[in-house]
Image (cartoon, rainbow, N blue to C red; front, side, top):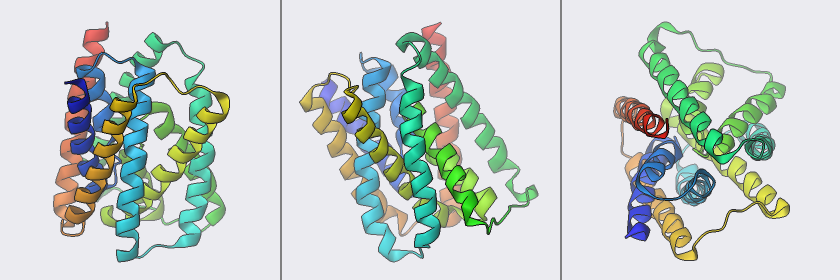
Length: 254
């Protein structure tokens, strides 16, 4: 029963993540936290595995169909990989009980902030940074936040890429998947080297990865057909959903 639940949650979240570039972890992590008996470390790990699998599949299928600046993407990716390691280091400094509450509060703050940004987007003049040396710290910040929260960081990626690099949502979603892929890969490598991977059931792990792969395949098909305005509504709906779920989780943990 738990395995099927993990599969369905990861599949549904990964479809949304692949379509919009938000990664899916921002939906996956709070829902798994609410519906499974697993602790915050294992939930974050399962979520990261599913998000990584989704990003590999979706990026492979979408990258050849969209314009992609390899130099810009690589600078962002290198920064995000370093941020992924930093996020895992930060993760180890907190107890599980406090960490779960901190992650939930940060999720609510980020979701609310991004909703406000989305509503006021027409009145905000985006920047278009040409200095590529700034892409490295930008990627570092995004990778750190995404790995520490175990959410893939997609919603934050989209907002930052839209504002600082003047990307529309469809283009930003492609770069977001690239950032997610590199930051998660770096964090996995760090956990393997440090021996901090939590104990897990292989059956549950395979269900999470299968959900990520299935979501990546379905999401990439839908993503090629979705319009910019529909992507905006999906993005907004996800943020509202996450804010509500995170609020329920926070209330139950107090």
